[in-house]
Amino acid sequence: MSEHILTEVAGGVLTVTLNRPERLNAWTMEMGDAYFDVLDRADDDPGIRVVVLTGAGRGFCAGIDMEVLGAAAGGRLPRPAAGRRMTHAQSFRKPLIAAVNGACVGFGLVQALACDIRFAAASAYFLPAFAQRGLNAEYGTSWLLPRMIGQTRATEWLFSGRRMDAAEAERVGLVNGVRDDENLLDQTLDYARRLARTASPTALADTKAQIAGDWLRDRTAAEDHAKELGHAPGHRVDFEEGVRSFLDRRPPDFAPLTPRSPDPANPLAPADHP
Image (cartoon, one colour):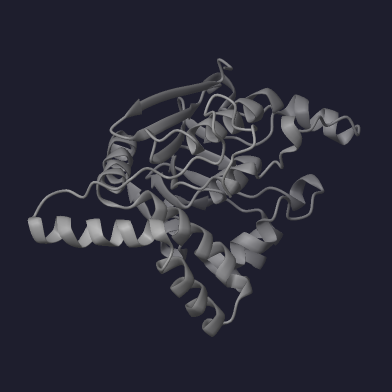
């Protein structure tokens, strides 16, 4: 585990903290590999139902570290380990929630966009800064941003690279809510723990996959796909438990998400099931 990634588990929620505060948590390949390793293990850990991502100190992530950018400009940018994309977090099956504190810039913005839900501190700000570095809209931001904030807003923002404060980010739909700086992480964790306590892990994973995949389906195909998922054995068991717990006025006891691999310590090992 890298010293630049801190982890803590409580109440079914894993908190991951980017930990280079002296550099506003600027991204390095070592940090990225460690973060993606943590997500791979968490995906297969039945004790973890939700992950919250935040940054240590005054920033969330100020983008790729300037030394790494210098190497990239010279054509020497290393790649993430295990053949993973720089947007590997988007393959994580469980809810991934960003608690954005301070600067969220460039590649830091990419990682925030890879999360399913984003809460921001009142002092947080967002900056794409791609065109101003001679870069196109990197790592799928041209696909993600129009779907989040609309094509017109996304185009203007990616062109200008201007600073967007937390209030505007909430208004345009980039973040789900703005919190006082001192309450950001606690309130985000409260939300995450409520998800971990009350929602079916299987239903959350399938809903997450539907939200991503249904952009490529028409309405009828999306409806038919939802029916197929709803009749899968895991869903029927969870539906029965959800109804029973509601009638009994007790918290639901949903089964954990089925691991992708038989060994959570080795998430790249093949599983015996699909």
